[in-house]
Image (cartoon, rainbow, N blue to C red; front, side):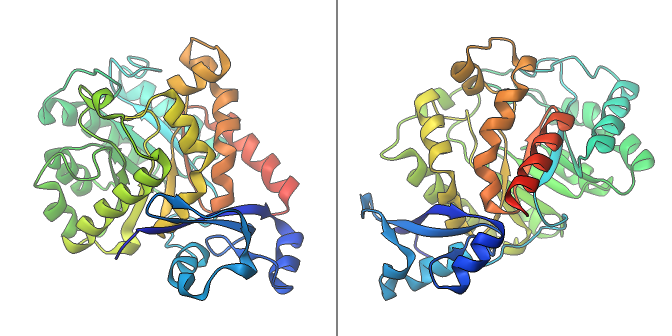
Length: 344
């Protein structure tokens, strides 16, 4: 499948207005709805056609148009926007490193997130912040394993995601009952990861990154960051599918802050709806990141939650985003307000 051609949906409408516009032929559903778009930009290579109404899209763009209008697989999660609560079982994560030093603290945090509305918990045992120190897979599993076992025992109905790039950890996490593997390298780091996951039925998150946490800053050079991220994720999806992972099991993450500088992060966020070309559910993670600090002037990561919520709103148009955040309570409030305002 070629992604030389991309469509950027614009001119969004919601709720009853969206339904009326679709019925009148003035809009098309974005990712199956509930949002709809009335205008598009057509991108071929790096050539961008000017803004045009959906009725004027040339007939030979029908395959690309179908990609951004069809409903996407739910990957075993409820429909609509979902909150993924972050549980970093690491001593050196940028925002909350060392905060969850034991199983009891992790369980307390997890219960609070679920009460606040999280439907997925994402456990990480290795920091992937810029310049982070690499740990062995065995050490990573020593951190993750006991917490995963405790969560399965106390919160059996909550989906568990494990944030890892190591097949050793993936295999043990899936055997222990994890539902999703979230790999920041899109299965490019460990050659054993793809065949392992092809033999399973779990959800798989493919995140965009170039290089490693130690080298990624050197790779932040793009022709057009939004277009390049979509096309590079498309390549990783195709690798995964050819390797035996069914497309309906795949979610994508644009990887804010990974091999992207501040201006590139802003540009990616402005054009985040280009991700609709991939036909996958989107995991969206801007929580407390440096880009929020740069935008707001807030230097303390755990004080960036309001900025996180504002930066997450563009993803809501995708209908079924999975919002990966530290502050579940605040994000859930923001999502509920957004839903009420836009009648969805």
